[in-house]
Length: 366
Image (cartoon, rainbow, N blue to C red; front, side, top):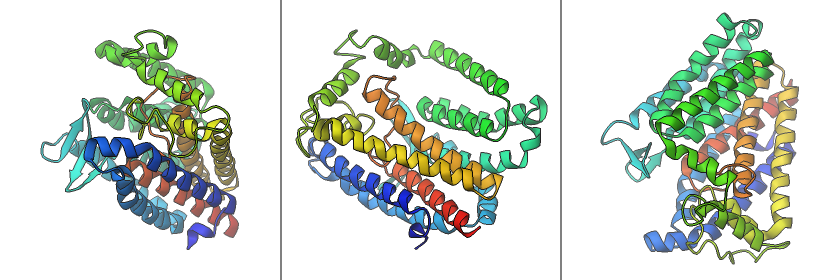
């Protein structure tokens, strides 16, 4: 199997993150599963049946594809993802929850197309940027077309709304643009445009400011806007040096909002403590090292940018999730890769690491 014929250290780290993540999800979800569905193992069973099964299949396929095949698939994949993102707004197909319209129902299976958009845009931008390296320093041939690629997905994500995913995609896209040879002044200019857009989005829907005010002033409204961050830091602090022990989190007993989603790191830290959390974070550090190393050694601009983008989005999302739980950044509502519940998220993450391992194999064969 090609998953074991690439970067061995990266493969080990992925297995450790995935195995540890599934254990943490099992512990974090039992109370919520029992309360909501009278099935303590509801969440982990669906994660194993849907997310892990689909993810491993995607990872195996991604690990064996050649550079030529990635070139051929880039446009069909991004086209399919944009089509799925449109379908979420079609009555009878798409459905919403919590004020957001982000999912597609396929019988007992639900898909979140915005998760697949992360992979699709990294792939397409890697191909597009690798073919335009000589044009990126121009506004007309580089910056404007680059922005034009991002606008359709941006509008669809704003309408859902899924601003956090949009932020991950835009941040990753800008990093890839700069890595491909884009000018820093142009990157800073696009960041400025992004800040203007965020200001307008907040003006249109002021509730979006709540995450930032909760971060800046966690003592304000402790039973409202700042409740989640206060409960998360309480869970992390009560874990101490070695933690309460696996399965013994107290905050997961319906005190901590979203214990299977964006707050799952708090449950992890409460159960394994500072030392266990440091080991977990170290795995992501090693993941970043091996991923960017694969990018640097890739035999083509396309593969280099592809590996860079895949590594960047996973690491950025993980760091933002953990920083939010530690009150070092606003809580953005994004899942923790390999750990948080969500079949679409896990499948896309595993497809991405499968592609990374495949690129490392190509590097060794080159």
